[in-house]
Amino acid sequence: MIFTAAFWCDGACQGAPEKCHARIEVELEPTIPNPRDPAFLSGLAANPLYTLTWFDGHDDIAVYDLTGPATDYRCEGEISRLRKSAHVRELNVQYPDSQDPRSAPRAE
Image (cartoon, rainbow, N blue to C red; front, side, top):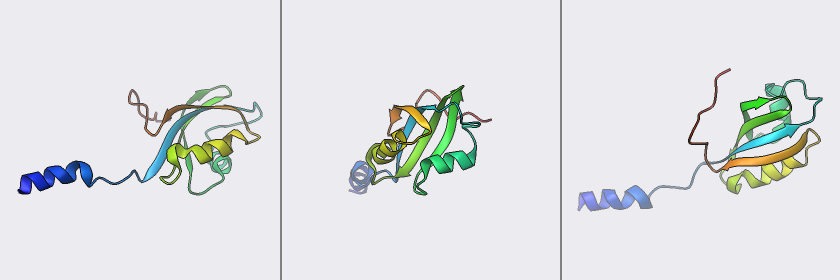
């Protein structure tokens, strides 16, 4: 009986994720001097519930991990807002809902 209860809770008792997550590739305006700058990233996210973390990039292309509240499915609301930013030329979602299983964030 105890084993059955533990087995039942293993799948049924798991809650929803606490955060949304997406890996996004962003083509930035060439006037952005440092796409890794924390001040730039917090200004670009503009909402304190969301965090942009540098993952990779070159030239005007930056890849970020975007995290935010679980109430925003796949961070779609924030992605939509980021696409309208004057600093963003183009935004593509690489991995909605989870990190790229092939790699982890790189240390600088």
